[in-house]
Length: 96
Image (cartoon, helix red, strand yellow):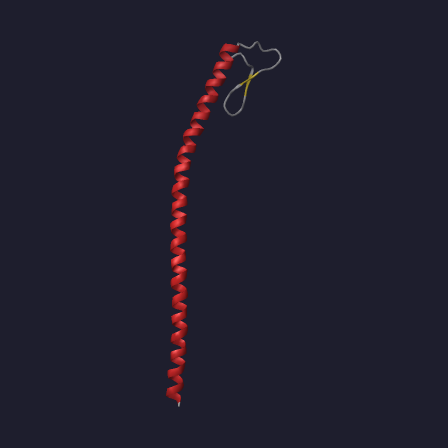
């Protein structure tokens, strides 16, 4: 390329006033670099979409499990409370 400088991330041409651009080489090279980088991002993103979908399914499953556990804990608390009342009744009857 006939550019004196390049961009820091993907090396696109960055011209200064005294540069003599070779537009066919500079332009095509820059477009090729951009296409390659965008293609890589597109590939990475499609993998991310799959991973995000899997995570959403896992979170949904965990939410269901937590809901079931919450229901079970509530039922157990009710049973413990009822048993406590029964024990108090038995203790009272024994004491009399």
